[in-house]
Length: 391
Image (spheres, rainbow, N blue to C red):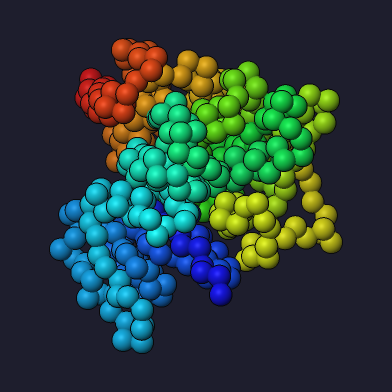
């Protein structure tokens, strides 16, 4: 009997983590060996009782008093009982545990970097949903992956689509990759109206169900800026090999144009379970819970160039992808802090990207920063956003 592949889901209570558990539930030969969550304690307890993982990590030390191993007791389970770990060290421990075959990095933001790096150092197969890992530390992660033999498989729908389309040709034959973007809730809004956008309006994404931070990033199109930077590192591209196109239907998840000018696209209904499953089962494809395209119904596919004036985050993404170094860490941290301020009504919608650019332009650039320098750049950028708000 073949042993099941053991998966550590870092961020199981988020939207990607919940979809991943649904994939595992419908997939033979895979098990959730470890799960982690931040503040959603009750959901974490429910997931632990349903999937009986070997370990649960309460990543936020402040919630550890409200959760214990006794919460996961299952009298009908003959296997080892579920153990509770806490804090950042708990995340690192399960990311590098020898029993783990695949690590799903789905913790949002800079908080997910350290555990993802731990998985890469140990040569784990990394299913990467945390785009900030490569945005912040692309040069470090790719070097570590090359040294350890880690295979990084993208979970973002756009990067998964690129990865799938790339298999239609050889690496040397790739001309450009085209990232598609829904355009978010303000795709057709007048530029003048964006300064008065409310939090509720910005959270109302027309296609995807996502957490608050990612929803705001989609509204500003900073998510696409981060994806530009991620694509550079993930696929070994230059900034001028990456394009963005607006595609409101979100059916074409991205495309690759080869040197003979043939463009290969990956299509599917917008459902994160498909790229998650492919990152788990690659190089095989197996039946799963994601829906298929319904070709019995008429559909329309629209594509249009992005408006860089309305969405200046895109230009920022290309600039950071070209410059590299510490730029990604600074823009990512500034954006996280600015989005948090917007959600608290301390910053206007249009000031999110403006603040990010100003912080980027005033930072001390490092071409080849160490991990410690990246941590320092992250901290500095967040402090600068606080000063920017208070000014």
